[in-house]
Amino acid sequence: MKQSQAMVRILAVAAALFLTATANGSTSPHRKSARTPVVMFPAYFFTTLKVTVHHQTVAPECPRSGSFRVFFLNDEPTAFSTVCQMKLLTLRYDAKRGKPMSRRFSDQRGVDVRIEDNGKTESAPFYEPMYEALEGAGYVRDRDIRVAGYDSRLTPDMRNFLNRTKLLIEDTYRDNGRQPVHLVGHSNGPLYIQYLLTHTSQRWKDKYIHGFTPFAGNFPGQGVLYPLFFTGLDVTDFTFPTTPETARAGAEMMLRNPSSYMSASDPRIFDRLETVLTDASAGKSYTPEDYRELFDDAGLSWAREIADHYIGFVDFADPSAFPNVDVYAEKGSGIDTVVGIGLDDLSVGQVLDSSNPLFTRDGDINQEDITNDAVGVWSAMPCFHFSLTDNPGVDHFALPSAPAVLARLLVDIARPRSRC
Image 1 (cartoon, rainbow, N blue to C red):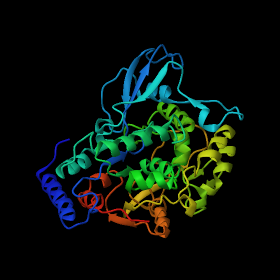
Image 2 (cartoon, rainbow, N blue to C red):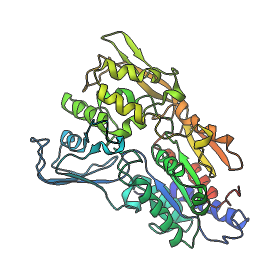
Image 3 (cartoon, rainbow, N blue to C red):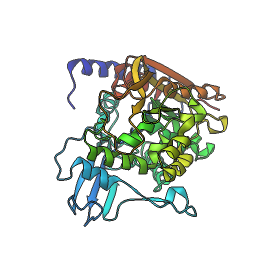
Image 4 (tube, rainbow, N blue to C red):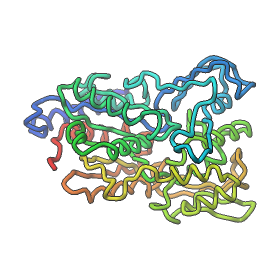
């Protein structure tokens, strides 16, 4: 990703702010001039996934074998069409109630999905401006800048995410002179960080964690996820499918991704504050509080069971679930943001057009104000630092590369930790 001359100047200023903070004693005397290593947790489908297909039969119209990569804004040519990619990424769901929910999901037979370049900055190319800002302050990729990627279809209780990520953080700590690690997350990434911080001991956090910077953390979910169960989503560019085939495949994929439910607005936070879906055929409206009725009305009782388990899955609002590390949160605001959609009915696989009404609130173009403000509950953490900085007019996708945000990040990671 090439930089303009303006960006070069901005990164130089950010680096100067970082070095000034260090020179003025903002770092702990026990750390001298050592840099705080950073581990980045990407947004939903911003981690590069390598999909390898071996003699698959679930989608006979698609190539039986081969491979493709999936990540946001990927435009690489591939023999696998969008519909084929969606069908092959759709998880199988075993509804047996005797099985733990986290073990009910598996890849299609003959399909293997892996994180490409796990731990390295190459695994999340969207964040080049952030990596470059850190490099301007002396950081080195894959040494004191690392990436904790994840399969965005899955929730953090699956496929050894917790142990794998703890090991990455511990290795980063040891490889950088035993310096505690600063965790940075964008959008859904902070959900995975919060799960980690609430499933590790305070002793572990006191040793390994410097602090936590969530960029627009999607902690309580967002309303627009509910209509996506019926319309689908193209995860490579976050647009709505435009044909019945892609809409059906996309909606089926969303319904079987447990992370879809984790990302849907939690009624404990949203209650009835927004309309997330209307059904024109029945003249009925649904709020987050009505999600059970929504799935029942749509004849998706099996999906309601997943929803009951994963909506609000990552707790953050109760004091018992506070992260208890220093937090430097960032958000955008002042942009009309879709939180719900009017659908013709509750059939799975609908194509939207100009006749479908959109329901909006203030937000950052991707997440509404309720979502982005919810993290403010952490201001009640005793002892630990908390701040939430608003960036009016900065959209959700621009936030991790916004010059002012990067400048603050460089200063914040140079600060001493709170001693609690």
